[in-house]
Amino acid sequence: MGWTFFPEDAKQALRIRRFLMAALSYVLWVGLTAYCYQLGLVQISPRGFWIAVALTGVCNFTFYALLRSGLNRYWPDPSLTLPQMVVATVWVMLLMALAPKVRGMLLMLYAVVFLFGVFRLRRGEYLGLTALVIVSYGLVVLRDVYGQSSGIPLPLEALQFVVLSATLIWLAFFGSYVGKLRETVSRRNSELAAALSKNQRLAVHDDLTGTYNRRHIMQILEQEQLRAQRTGRGFTLCLMDLDYFKSVNDRYGHLAGDDVLRQFAMLVLREIRTLDRVGRDGPDAGHWGDEHFGRYGGEEFMLVMPETDLDGAHVCIERIRRKVAGTPLQVQGTDLKLTVSCGLAVYRPGEDLRATLSRADQALYQAKEAGRDRVKSMMA
Image 1 (cartoon, helix red, strand yellow):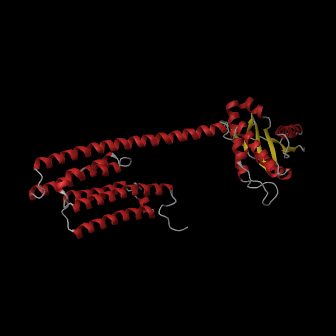
Image 2 (image 1 turned 135 degrees about the vertical axis):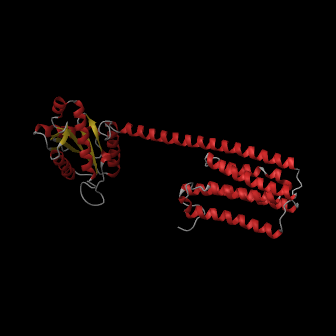
Image 3 (image 1 turned 180 degrees about the horizontal axis):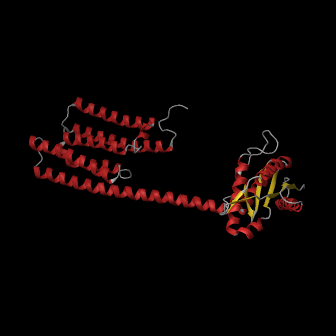
């Protein structure tokens, strides 16, 4: 891609747009200065005037280059708010020094500069900038008073100085207050977003095992049904049930039983995450993972394997069954070996989901009747 005025990074593009607003203020200031110059109100030579205009352009181009190149990211405030305000303050101070006859009207330019940082600067930064303005403006006034070059009465100069100081101090506190409000709103928005994300997670996840809950896993099942009807390729459904889980609750208590369910769910999740493809190889092989695994109810879990035939699903579920049987779970400081029975059923495009679920449930029943710790399948 070629060069563009705005970067693709949305935050950088926003910073440049804000910079352009400030640059537009410079254009207005230069126009105002040029008008005052034509009226003979600015004490500067033609050559000095054009040098000042050129330097103003250089300052703005430098800030744009920093923003466009990305070097601004190394600054604590990537928007470069304070540096831009300091530079603007220096230019306004020079204008105050060169146009004493209209100084009172031009004092509002300081307020424009201060408003530029209302959403960014902290109170300390605002007060530091205020001190810079008051000191620099005071030096300009002292120069005129001792040089008697402005022609403005001293009481009026003093009044302008006091009004400017009071206004800027007020703007400093007001700006920092608005900045704090913005930070508070931003923090609360982040907290709200986090709470919303948590609620969304709780709405689809089982609060005990962290896997998807029954309602959401059924929604996934319906989505896979629609895809199967669209593509003509079915999927395989697996129901898993922990063997003799009731005895765990009876012996160790329900809290220990809950812990066993969590450990089992995490064990299965770790195992299925290693299975990137199931079924036949090639472009039509399905992809699946923990987003297709959830708690169906009690100690029963469901795994949906998209675009997977029965043979491929059987290989994968056998691998999970062996992993569960060979991995002891921790229960009250002791190792407990559990097994899992699994029932498989293949969805055929066009059939009712209840029929597929019924076959998977019958296959699970057969696995338990045959002695548990095994995988059975039920054909259509």
